[in-house]
Image (cartoon, rainbow, N blue to C red; front, side, top):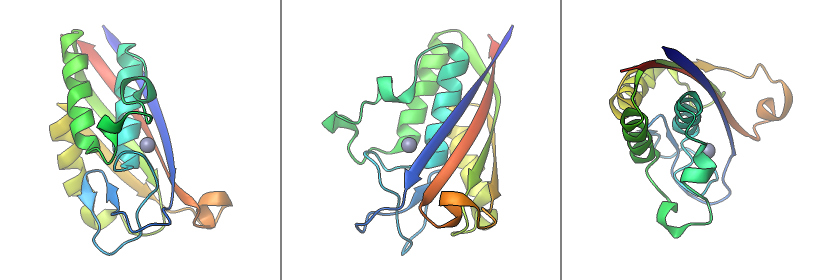
Length: 156
Ligand SMILES: [Zn+2]
C-alpha cells in the first residue's frame, strides 16, 4: 500500500538580518526569509507532504507559530520529528521531490548538499530542483520564495 502527499510553502524576504537557510544549507551574507522558525521553505514543504501522505495533519498543527518552543527552530530537526511520527504510524518514505522557485541564491551549486540534508532527516531519498521565476509575478518582483513538494510513503 502506498500514499502520496503534497506540500506547499511560501516565505517573504525578511527585513531584519536573520540568516538564510534553505534545505538545511546556510547562505552567509544573503538576506534571510521571514518566519517564526528558521523559515526553511523547502524543509517545510517536505514536512507537509509527508504529514499529508500519512494523514497526520499539517505543520501548523504540529509546530504552531504561537509557541516559543519553535521560535528560530531548526527545520531539519522538525523534519526528523515528523519522520519519526511517520515511521511510528507504520510508513516508510519511498521518496520525496521538491521544487523551489527562487532567483538568488542559485540552488544548483548546493543541490547535492540540500538533498543530503533532507534525505538524512526524512529517512528516505529527497530530491531538489531549483527554478527561476523568469520575472513573473510576486516572486519575480523579489517578494519571497515558494517551495512545493510531493512525498510517497509505503506501508512497512
Ligand atoms: Zn514555512
